[in-house]
Image (cartoon, rainbow, N blue to C red; front, side, top):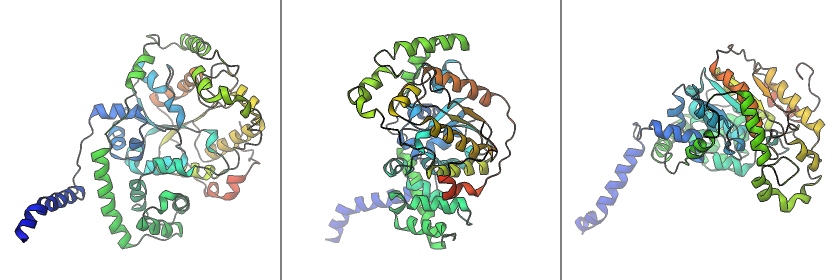
Length: 422
Protein backbone atom coordinates (compact mmCIF):
# COMPACT_ATOMS: atom_id res chain seq x y z
CA UNK A 1 0.00 0.00 0.00
CA UNK A 2 2.79 2.40 0.98
CA UNK A 3 4.65 1.52 -2.22
CA UNK A 4 1.56 2.27 -4.31
CA UNK A 5 1.08 5.63 -2.56
CA UNK A 6 4.69 6.51 -3.18
CA UNK A 7 4.36 5.63 -6.85
CA UNK A 8 1.35 7.95 -7.08
CA UNK A 9 2.49 10.88 -4.94
CA UNK A 10 6.25 10.38 -4.91
CA UNK A 11 6.96 12.11 -8.23
CA UNK A 12 4.78 15.07 -7.21
CA UNK A 13 6.57 15.32 -3.85
CA UNK A 14 9.99 15.07 -5.46
CA UNK A 15 9.06 17.69 -8.04
CA UNK A 16 7.90 20.01 -5.26
CA UNK A 17 11.13 19.51 -3.31
CA UNK A 18 13.16 20.12 -6.45
CA UNK A 19 11.25 23.33 -7.15
CA UNK A 20 11.86 24.54 -3.59
CA UNK A 21 15.53 23.70 -3.88
CA UNK A 22 15.75 25.72 -7.10
CA UNK A 23 13.85 28.69 -5.72
CA UNK A 24 15.94 28.89 -2.56
CA UNK A 25 19.27 28.10 -4.22
CA UNK A 26 21.95 30.83 -4.16
CA UNK A 27 22.38 30.67 -7.93
CA UNK A 28 20.93 33.03 -10.53
CA UNK A 29 18.24 31.27 -12.56
CA UNK A 30 18.24 33.34 -15.73
CA UNK A 31 20.32 35.62 -17.91
CA UNK A 32 18.93 38.84 -19.37
CA UNK A 33 20.12 39.31 -22.94
CA UNK A 34 20.68 42.60 -24.77
CA UNK A 35 17.45 42.27 -26.74
CA UNK A 36 15.41 42.06 -23.53
CA UNK A 37 17.29 45.03 -22.08
CA UNK A 38 16.52 47.18 -25.13
CA UNK A 39 12.88 46.14 -25.13
CA UNK A 40 12.53 46.75 -21.39
CA UNK A 41 14.04 50.24 -21.69
CA UNK A 42 10.88 51.52 -23.38
CA UNK A 43 8.32 48.89 -22.37
CA UNK A 44 6.94 50.79 -19.34
CA UNK A 45 5.84 47.35 -18.12
CA UNK A 46 4.87 47.04 -14.44
CA UNK A 47 6.99 43.90 -13.97
CA UNK A 48 10.08 45.88 -14.99
CA UNK A 49 9.30 48.69 -12.56
CA UNK A 50 8.51 46.27 -9.73
CA UNK A 51 11.38 43.90 -10.37
CA UNK A 52 15.15 43.85 -10.07
CA UNK A 53 16.84 41.56 -12.55
CA UNK A 54 16.08 43.44 -15.79
CA UNK A 55 16.83 46.92 -14.42
CA UNK A 56 19.96 45.59 -12.71
CA UNK A 57 21.20 44.00 -15.93
CA UNK A 58 20.46 46.98 -18.20
CA UNK A 59 21.77 49.68 -15.88
CA UNK A 60 25.03 47.80 -15.40
CA UNK A 61 25.79 49.09 -18.92
CA UNK A 62 26.76 52.76 -19.03
CA UNK A 63 24.74 53.48 -22.18
CA UNK A 64 21.41 52.93 -20.38
CA UNK A 65 20.42 56.00 -18.35
CA UNK A 66 17.52 55.87 -15.86
CA UNK A 67 14.69 58.31 -16.63
CA UNK A 68 12.34 58.57 -13.63
CA UNK A 69 8.86 60.01 -14.06
CA UNK A 70 5.27 58.98 -14.62
CA UNK A 71 2.69 58.97 -17.40
CA UNK A 72 4.47 61.47 -19.66
CA UNK A 73 6.80 58.70 -20.83
CA UNK A 74 3.91 56.69 -22.30
CA UNK A 75 2.97 59.48 -24.73
CA UNK A 76 5.30 58.78 -27.64
CA UNK A 77 5.77 61.25 -30.47
CA UNK A 78 8.69 62.25 -32.71
CA UNK A 79 10.35 64.37 -29.99
CA UNK A 80 10.07 61.82 -27.17
CA UNK A 81 13.51 61.24 -25.54
CA UNK A 82 13.61 57.60 -26.65
CA UNK A 83 12.84 58.53 -30.26
CA UNK A 84 15.48 61.28 -30.44
CA UNK A 85 18.13 59.08 -28.83
CA UNK A 86 17.38 56.29 -31.30
CA UNK A 87 17.23 58.44 -34.44
CA UNK A 88 20.40 60.39 -33.76
CA UNK A 89 22.34 57.43 -32.38
CA UNK A 90 23.06 59.10 -29.08
CA UNK A 91 25.63 57.64 -26.73
CA UNK A 92 22.83 56.97 -24.23
CA UNK A 93 19.55 55.07 -24.28
CA UNK A 94 16.81 56.26 -21.89
CA UNK A 95 15.66 53.47 -19.58
CA UNK A 96 12.14 54.65 -18.80
CA UNK A 97 11.18 54.07 -15.17
CA UNK A 98 7.78 55.60 -14.89
CA UNK A 99 4.18 54.97 -15.86
CA UNK A 100 0.73 56.32 -14.98
CA UNK A 101 0.49 56.38 -11.19
CA UNK A 102 4.19 56.25 -10.30
CA UNK A 103 5.29 58.92 -7.82
CA UNK A 104 8.18 59.58 -5.46
CA UNK A 105 7.41 56.79 -2.98
CA UNK A 106 7.28 54.20 -5.76
CA UNK A 107 10.56 55.47 -7.17
CA UNK A 108 12.26 55.42 -3.79
CA UNK A 109 11.46 51.76 -3.16
CA UNK A 110 12.19 50.62 -6.71
CA UNK A 111 15.57 52.38 -6.48
CA UNK A 112 16.51 50.05 -3.61
CA UNK A 113 16.88 47.22 -6.12
CA UNK A 114 19.50 49.00 -8.24
CA UNK A 115 21.62 50.90 -5.72
CA UNK A 116 24.97 49.76 -7.16
CA UNK A 117 23.85 50.64 -10.70
CA UNK A 118 22.88 54.20 -9.66
CA UNK A 119 26.05 54.94 -7.73
CA UNK A 120 28.17 57.71 -9.28
CA UNK A 121 25.89 57.74 -12.35
CA UNK A 122 23.70 60.30 -14.10
CA UNK A 123 19.91 60.22 -14.15
CA UNK A 124 16.93 62.27 -15.33
CA UNK A 125 13.91 62.87 -13.10
CA UNK A 126 10.61 64.45 -14.22
CA UNK A 127 8.68 66.10 -11.36
CA UNK A 128 4.94 66.30 -11.98
CA UNK A 129 3.12 69.05 -10.06
CA UNK A 130 0.03 66.80 -10.06
CA UNK A 131 1.75 64.42 -7.62
CA UNK A 132 1.61 67.03 -4.88
CA UNK A 133 -2.03 66.79 -3.87
CA UNK A 134 -3.29 66.94 -0.30
CA UNK A 135 -3.33 63.18 0.31
CA UNK A 136 -0.13 62.43 -1.61
CA UNK A 137 0.47 59.13 -3.40
CA UNK A 138 -2.63 57.10 -4.20
CA UNK A 139 -2.60 53.84 -2.28
CA UNK A 140 -3.95 51.75 -5.15
CA UNK A 141 -1.36 53.13 -7.58
CA UNK A 142 1.46 52.54 -5.12
CA UNK A 143 0.30 48.95 -4.54
CA UNK A 144 0.19 48.30 -8.29
CA UNK A 145 3.91 49.04 -8.69
CA UNK A 146 5.02 47.66 -5.32
CA UNK A 147 6.82 44.37 -4.87
CA UNK A 148 7.67 42.70 -1.53
CA UNK A 149 11.15 42.31 -3.00
CA UNK A 150 11.57 46.09 -2.73
CA UNK A 151 10.81 46.25 1.00
CA UNK A 152 12.69 43.01 1.71
CA UNK A 153 15.88 44.33 0.11
CA UNK A 154 15.39 47.69 1.83
CA UNK A 155 14.85 46.17 5.28
CA UNK A 156 18.00 44.07 5.01
CA UNK A 157 19.99 47.30 4.63
CA UNK A 158 18.71 48.73 7.88
CA UNK A 159 21.37 48.98 10.58
CA UNK A 160 20.63 52.32 12.18
CA UNK A 161 17.88 54.83 12.75
CA UNK A 162 18.27 57.60 10.20
CA UNK A 163 15.32 59.90 9.79
CA UNK A 164 15.03 58.84 6.14
CA UNK A 165 14.60 55.21 7.19
CA UNK A 166 12.08 55.99 9.92
CA UNK A 167 10.02 58.16 7.58
CA UNK A 168 10.11 55.58 4.75
CA UNK A 169 8.99 52.81 7.10
CA UNK A 170 6.11 54.91 8.42
CA UNK A 171 4.97 55.78 4.90
CA UNK A 172 5.05 52.16 3.79
CA UNK A 173 3.04 51.16 6.84
CA UNK A 174 0.38 53.67 5.74
CA UNK A 175 -0.03 51.68 2.53
CA UNK A 176 -1.92 48.36 2.30
CA UNK A 177 1.26 46.88 0.79
CA UNK A 178 3.16 47.45 4.02
CA UNK A 179 0.70 45.30 5.94
CA UNK A 180 0.45 42.37 3.54
CA UNK A 181 3.21 40.28 5.17
CA UNK A 182 3.31 39.87 8.95
CA UNK A 183 7.09 39.66 9.25
CA UNK A 184 7.68 42.61 6.93
CA UNK A 185 5.10 44.62 8.86
CA UNK A 186 6.70 43.91 12.23
CA UNK A 187 10.14 44.74 10.82
CA UNK A 188 8.84 48.01 9.39
CA UNK A 189 7.39 48.94 12.78
CA UNK A 190 10.79 48.43 14.41
CA UNK A 191 12.51 50.65 11.83
CA UNK A 192 9.78 53.28 12.19
CA UNK A 193 10.53 53.31 15.94
CA UNK A 194 14.25 53.76 15.29
CA UNK A 195 15.17 50.16 16.17
CA UNK A 196 17.16 47.53 14.30
CA UNK A 197 15.31 44.54 12.90
CA UNK A 198 15.72 41.34 14.95
CA UNK A 199 18.05 38.51 14.00
CA UNK A 200 15.02 36.30 13.40
CA UNK A 201 13.52 38.86 11.04
CA UNK A 202 16.84 39.19 9.21
CA UNK A 203 17.04 35.42 8.71
CA UNK A 204 13.48 35.25 7.39
CA UNK A 205 14.02 38.24 5.08
CA UNK A 206 17.26 36.77 3.71
CA UNK A 207 15.46 33.63 2.54
CA UNK A 208 12.44 35.65 1.40
CA UNK A 209 14.70 37.86 -0.71
CA UNK A 210 16.25 34.83 -2.38
CA UNK A 211 12.82 33.39 -3.19
CA UNK A 212 11.51 36.69 -4.56
CA UNK A 213 14.64 37.31 -6.62
CA UNK A 214 14.31 33.90 -8.22
CA UNK A 215 10.66 34.54 -9.02
CA UNK A 216 11.71 37.83 -10.59
CA UNK A 217 14.43 36.11 -12.62
CA UNK A 218 12.00 33.50 -13.91
CA UNK A 219 9.01 35.66 -14.77
CA UNK A 220 9.90 39.37 -15.16
CA UNK A 221 10.86 39.08 -18.84
CA UNK A 222 7.53 37.48 -19.76
CA UNK A 223 4.98 39.57 -21.67
CA UNK A 224 7.15 42.67 -21.98
CA UNK A 225 5.39 45.32 -24.02
CA UNK A 226 7.36 46.18 -27.16
CA UNK A 227 7.24 49.87 -28.11
CA UNK A 228 10.19 49.77 -30.51
CA UNK A 229 7.93 49.67 -33.56
CA UNK A 230 6.25 52.91 -32.51
CA UNK A 231 9.63 54.51 -31.81
CA UNK A 232 10.92 53.52 -35.25
CA UNK A 233 7.81 54.95 -36.94
CA UNK A 234 8.18 58.30 -35.19
CA UNK A 235 11.93 58.35 -35.90
CA UNK A 236 11.17 58.18 -39.65
CA UNK A 237 9.46 61.57 -39.36
CA UNK A 238 12.68 63.24 -38.21
CA UNK A 239 15.26 64.89 -40.48
CA UNK A 240 18.54 63.01 -40.82
CA UNK A 241 20.52 65.79 -39.16
CA UNK A 242 19.69 67.26 -35.76
CA UNK A 243 18.92 70.94 -36.32
CA UNK A 244 16.82 72.68 -33.72
CA UNK A 245 15.27 75.15 -36.17
CA UNK A 246 14.05 72.40 -38.47
CA UNK A 247 12.84 70.30 -35.56
CA UNK A 248 10.89 73.20 -34.08
CA UNK A 249 9.18 73.83 -37.43
CA UNK A 250 8.26 70.15 -37.55
CA UNK A 251 6.91 70.38 -33.98
CA UNK A 252 4.72 73.34 -34.89
CA UNK A 253 3.47 71.55 -38.01
CA UNK A 254 2.71 68.35 -36.09
CA UNK A 255 1.11 70.22 -33.21
CA UNK A 256 -1.11 72.26 -35.52
CA UNK A 257 -2.22 69.14 -37.41
CA UNK A 258 -3.06 67.21 -34.21
CA UNK A 259 -5.01 69.92 -32.34
CA UNK A 260 -7.79 70.90 -34.74
CA UNK A 261 -10.92 69.92 -32.79
CA UNK A 262 -10.53 72.12 -29.68
CA UNK A 263 -9.40 75.56 -28.53
CA UNK A 264 -7.00 74.29 -25.86
CA UNK A 265 -4.11 73.01 -27.98
CA UNK A 266 -4.88 69.46 -26.83
CA UNK A 267 -4.26 66.42 -29.01
CA UNK A 268 -7.41 65.59 -31.00
CA UNK A 269 -7.67 61.96 -29.89
CA UNK A 270 -7.11 62.78 -26.22
CA UNK A 271 -9.68 65.56 -26.33
CA UNK A 272 -12.28 63.44 -28.12
CA UNK A 273 -11.76 60.42 -25.88
CA UNK A 274 -11.33 62.08 -22.49
CA UNK A 275 -12.77 65.61 -22.49
CA UNK A 276 -15.21 66.53 -25.25
CA UNK A 277 -18.38 65.00 -23.84
CA UNK A 278 -17.60 66.14 -20.29
CA UNK A 279 -15.98 69.50 -21.01
CA UNK A 280 -18.55 71.61 -19.16
CA UNK A 281 -17.99 69.56 -15.98
CA UNK A 282 -14.39 70.75 -15.91
CA UNK A 283 -15.15 74.47 -16.11
CA UNK A 284 -13.96 76.01 -12.83
CA UNK A 285 -13.44 72.55 -11.34
CA UNK A 286 -9.81 73.13 -10.29
CA UNK A 287 -10.18 76.56 -8.72
CA UNK A 288 -9.45 75.17 -5.24
CA UNK A 289 -6.79 72.63 -6.22
CA UNK A 290 -3.54 73.01 -4.35
CA UNK A 291 -0.11 71.54 -5.14
CA UNK A 292 1.74 73.39 -2.36
CA UNK A 293 0.68 71.31 0.65
CA UNK A 294 1.29 67.58 0.42
CA UNK A 295 3.13 64.62 2.00
CA UNK A 296 4.62 64.20 -1.49
CA UNK A 297 7.24 66.83 -0.61
CA UNK A 298 8.66 64.48 2.04
CA UNK A 299 8.27 61.44 -0.22
CA UNK A 300 10.28 63.38 -2.79
CA UNK A 301 12.90 64.02 -0.12
CA UNK A 302 13.37 60.26 0.17
CA UNK A 303 14.35 60.22 -3.50
CA UNK A 304 16.73 63.16 -3.05
CA UNK A 305 18.24 61.51 0.02
CA UNK A 306 18.81 58.32 -1.96
CA UNK A 307 20.39 60.16 -4.89
CA UNK A 308 22.69 62.01 -2.50
CA UNK A 309 23.79 58.83 -0.71
CA UNK A 310 24.64 57.25 -4.08
CA UNK A 311 26.30 60.39 -5.50
CA UNK A 312 23.93 60.29 -8.46
CA UNK A 313 24.03 63.43 -10.61
CA UNK A 314 20.48 64.25 -11.68
CA UNK A 315 18.84 66.56 -14.20
CA UNK A 316 15.40 67.48 -12.86
CA UNK A 317 12.59 68.46 -15.25
CA UNK A 318 9.71 70.63 -14.02
CA UNK A 319 7.01 70.60 -16.73
CA UNK A 320 4.24 73.20 -17.02
CA UNK A 321 0.53 72.66 -17.21
CA UNK A 322 -1.52 73.60 -20.26
CA UNK A 323 -2.29 77.28 -19.70
CA UNK A 324 -5.45 77.46 -21.80
CA UNK A 325 -6.89 74.42 -20.05
CA UNK A 326 -5.89 75.63 -16.57
CA UNK A 327 -7.57 78.98 -17.25
CA UNK A 328 -10.72 77.08 -18.21
CA UNK A 329 -10.64 74.89 -15.09
CA UNK A 330 -9.64 77.73 -12.76
CA UNK A 331 -6.29 76.30 -11.63
CA UNK A 332 -4.51 79.11 -9.78
CA UNK A 333 -1.37 80.57 -11.48
CA UNK A 334 -0.29 81.97 -8.11
CA UNK A 335 -0.49 78.51 -6.53
CA UNK A 336 1.55 77.01 -9.38
CA UNK A 337 4.20 79.70 -8.90
CA UNK A 338 4.45 78.91 -5.19
CA UNK A 339 4.77 75.21 -5.98
CA UNK A 340 7.60 75.96 -8.40
CA UNK A 341 9.41 78.11 -5.82
CA UNK A 342 8.95 75.48 -3.13
CA UNK A 343 10.24 72.53 -5.15
CA UNK A 344 13.16 74.59 -6.46
CA UNK A 345 14.09 75.60 -2.94
CA UNK A 346 13.98 71.98 -1.78
CA UNK A 347 16.30 71.06 -4.64
CA UNK A 348 18.81 73.90 -4.71
CA UNK A 349 19.22 74.31 -0.95
CA UNK A 350 20.48 70.72 -0.85
CA UNK A 351 22.83 70.99 -3.82
CA UNK A 352 20.59 69.70 -6.64
CA UNK A 353 21.23 72.48 -9.14
CA UNK A 354 20.63 70.83 -12.54
CA UNK A 355 17.06 71.95 -13.12
CA UNK A 356 15.19 72.34 -16.39
CA UNK A 357 12.33 74.53 -15.18
CA UNK A 358 9.65 74.80 -17.86
CA UNK A 359 6.87 75.85 -15.51
CA UNK A 360 6.34 79.16 -17.34
CA UNK A 361 5.96 77.56 -20.80
CA UNK A 362 2.37 76.35 -20.49
CA UNK A 363 1.16 79.04 -22.88
CA UNK A 364 3.67 78.28 -25.66
CA UNK A 365 1.80 76.85 -28.66
CA UNK A 366 2.20 73.08 -29.07
CA UNK A 367 4.39 72.81 -25.99
CA UNK A 368 1.88 70.49 -24.32
CA UNK A 369 0.20 67.44 -25.82
CA UNK A 370 -2.79 67.46 -23.50
CA UNK A 371 -3.75 69.06 -20.19
CA UNK A 372 -0.59 68.19 -18.24
CA UNK A 373 1.81 66.23 -20.44
CA UNK A 374 4.70 67.54 -22.51
CA UNK A 375 4.15 67.52 -26.24
CA UNK A 376 5.88 68.29 -29.51
CA UNK A 377 7.80 71.45 -28.58
CA UNK A 378 7.94 70.56 -24.90
CA UNK A 379 10.06 67.46 -25.38
CA UNK A 380 12.36 69.41 -27.71
CA UNK A 381 12.94 71.96 -24.93
CA UNK A 382 13.72 69.12 -22.53
CA UNK A 383 16.14 67.61 -25.05
CA UNK A 384 18.10 70.86 -25.16
CA UNK A 385 18.91 70.29 -21.49
CA UNK A 386 19.24 66.54 -21.09
CA UNK A 387 21.41 65.84 -24.14
CA UNK A 388 24.33 68.07 -23.06
CA UNK A 389 23.84 67.00 -19.45
CA UNK A 390 24.23 63.34 -20.38
CA UNK A 391 26.91 63.67 -23.05
CA UNK A 392 29.21 66.29 -21.53
CA UNK A 393 31.25 66.18 -18.36
CA UNK A 394 29.45 67.74 -15.40
CA UNK A 395 30.65 69.17 -12.12
CA UNK A 396 30.51 66.73 -9.22
CA UNK A 397 27.54 67.85 -7.12
CA UNK A 398 27.95 68.66 -3.45
CA UNK A 399 24.84 67.56 -1.61
CA UNK A 400 23.77 68.71 1.86
CA UNK A 401 20.67 66.77 2.89
CA UNK A 402 18.45 68.56 5.39
CA UNK A 403 16.06 66.48 7.49
CA UNK A 404 13.63 69.41 7.84
CA UNK A 405 12.12 68.35 4.53
CA UNK A 406 10.63 65.29 6.24
CA UNK A 407 8.60 67.47 8.60
CA UNK A 408 4.87 68.19 8.51
CA UNK A 409 5.80 71.86 8.70
CA UNK A 410 7.60 71.68 5.36
CA UNK A 411 4.85 69.59 3.76
CA UNK A 412 2.33 72.33 4.56
CA UNK A 413 4.51 75.43 4.19
CA UNK A 414 3.36 78.01 1.63
CA UNK A 415 5.69 80.87 2.57
CA UNK A 416 8.91 79.89 0.80
CA UNK A 417 12.34 81.10 1.97
CA UNK A 418 13.86 83.75 -0.30
CA UNK A 419 17.22 81.94 -0.68
CA UNK A 420 16.28 80.51 -4.08
CA UNK A 421 13.18 81.56 -5.94
CA UNK A 422 14.52 82.21 -9.45
